[in-house]
Image 1: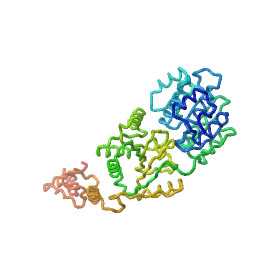
Image 2 (image 1 turned 45 degrees about the horizontal axis):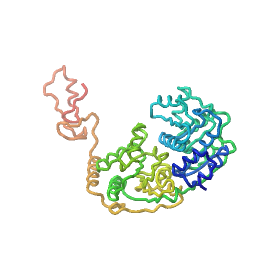
Image 3 (image 1 turned 90 degrees about the vertical axis):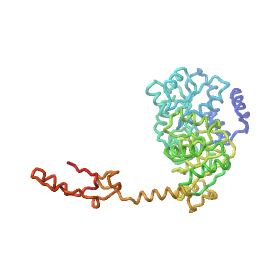
Image 4 (image 1 turned 135 degrees about the vertical axis):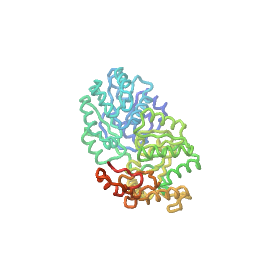
Length: 451
């Protein structure tokens, strides 16, 4: 089925053509006709399958059909992350480029005043993260009474992040008669329970499977955990990779890898929750523009980022939750294009890998890189590091009250073996007590006891 077969306004059909949309994806073919009829729905679809376009054209068509004032807030889209809010708002703006409808994204990590002023001027569609939405509701008198379309994107992620009460509270603030659409990448029991509670006689649409998609070639590279960054840098140079999204689990790991790649002369940036929104936006735009070869990211980038024709995703560290693996590699192989995913797996990662393979229903191929075989002798720099660590661990611990840099130059000298300070030869009745203390052994010559 093609886009031109849909009952869309000519202005929306023109925008779809300008955006390069011709054939409907599976989720679009099932969602758009149902949602245009005004029914609530729960749709489960993998990332990169066109679900944003599916719900966007629906809400735009319904807004154009309504007898309403332009600039009256009528549609609300909730997203779990700032990046997804920005991306969805940009997409809707492109789809509505030939109409007078306006869209605004509001999210935390940015100055609230420009967002507040834009709302005051009037918008038709609001894309929001829950935290910033309730800032505007509580502090700036935003009203949702005219909103008759609610879309919850990445519902499973919203649940993971603890936003379920915010979603329920939002629904109570909308127009009494409104429609709701939930979209999720996974069909967990929690998502089904939320849909059952929130939706009115919904249509259930499931166009996903346990597999992460046939367009993504998935590989496993087994190796020693200490050599992951080394292999990554070598592969980037050897294969002349120009655009690589690398996932790690923590911001500390991201910063550490950023420094190591920089030392290897590989231009890269980090993308994690401690970065300001401006810094994250700049890093993403530079990566998209080809100014960076590597973007090192935590799972904050696992959902919502749409990078056109991204060829390669690398899991330097496997995620704690197997579902996050599917979302990570879903950044490549989007919109029918092919992609490659490579996961670096050490011995301690085997349990996490087993959970991932159980989820996707297949065993991923292992490819051992020459020189990085398990159990192979480590390069000299690693052996030297191990020697230093072992030598340091073998040194006895410092005794209580003992100082580094004592006169004998030894660290960790025990009190029992420390040289003793001789008692004075001359005694008087006035210093008898202090001479008794002087007979006690000290930890070293530089020790000064409490007087």
